[in-house]
Length: 151
Image (cartoon, rainbow, N blue to C red; front, side, top):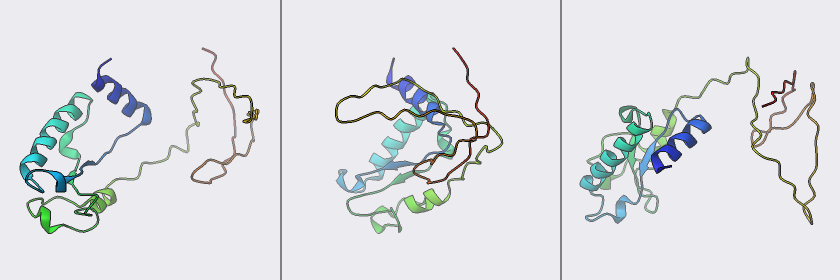
């Protein structure tokens, strides 16, 4: 399986519908903060994103320097040729997805691991009306119904 298929399958499995592409280490290009190198990266990554089903026109490509802090929170004078959003502005433009609270929660079970020795495995039974904590949100939803599908 080639990298494009692995990437697209992984992205679809995670449900990623929006993304931001950051071109980091712009301070390490030759010459520093090179618009030519940025354009080269955007062209190459855009063709890759098209292959996996994304529209690169809707994805912001943000040139940054994490080490120097350029274009992350505030617009950088080193990247004065770039007219798009900073990383923080691009993050603010991401639309919060609607939570499908009217649909059942689906938790795929890939495998069961048995760990012995110093790490005991605690077994739980999932039942209707069960209260459980979902991390990292620390929300405590109530499981109203439970359905199983035997494959």
